[in-house]
Image (cartoon, rainbow, N blue to C red; front, side, top):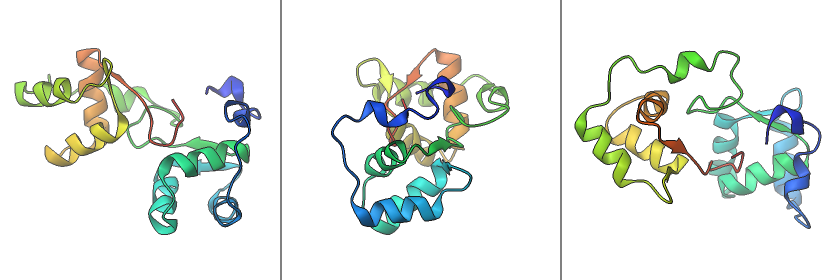
Length: 143
């Protein structure tokens, strides 16, 4: 959802509910009606809920998800994250292309490739921008 959807995030989850434990934890961790990607993933690890469940809870609580670790949303200067310093290596290009699902690179796969190549997650985003690869779906359900 985009900034135009602010205050209406719950609309994409018809008939969904939030377990009370998760609801309270999301409310506690959110700051100024925002929950960063990093905090959402940390909360998922700590509670045993999936990142998707944490993202859905944030949406239902009308809490905006921000600070994507791939640099795709919630940053004031996105361009800094998505400009490649150099073309991706052939090995990285092959890894990205091999991980595509329905012509997009899932967020989780992007994270795993970053780990495997010892790169920052935003460097994977930059490589994807260079190669015209769309990253989707988001683990938190933002896109």
